[in-house]
Image (cartoon, rainbow, N blue to C red):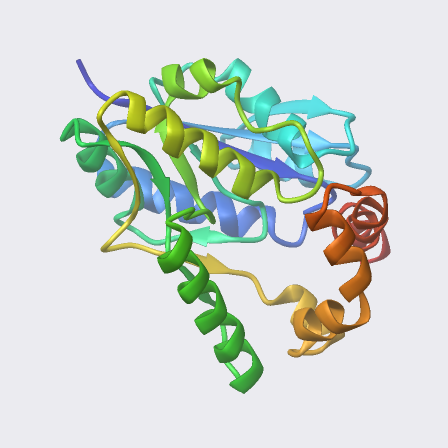
Length: 246
């Protein structure tokens, strides 16, 4: 039976970027030679995101939650493929991504994983950010970026963890723990990467996240201790409301 991959793309007013993201998936699909469906979950979109996605052959769903985990889960629940891959609407995957994911899962050694992250352009602060991410991933093993696993695995863990802050880390932890029970490892791609958009850095400066860590140190510490009220407001401003302003 041909492998069937469902690629889930959550999107909130992404008419400027959704086309290039879908085209990167289609290039990877052509290189993979298996069956691939692209599902774009339009989250409170008021622009042409859905129309562009449909024109490029994607299946378009709608979702009204202000929580990226719920948006991704809407796509996962509707997916027809036996393998799930997620990627954000302003990012791109490299040509061999889907083929490598299928190869790793078919080996039976891995429960799923993430992907190395590379910026679409570089500067000294972005290089520092890149190194920080690489060190963090190497220490924790909680790879993210592109998430991938079999659909039955996502179903077993209940999909992405339903929270606004650090849902990617929480989901990676669940996948890693579930894989351990199955005698499988949580891993990352070796030959392919996530090409990470620099849109926010282009708009707000390349030192953006380092500035945010300093300016919001108290909020971040409280969030680490369990009080996520402040981090929710910060995430709303930086992520959930950002596209409405740009």
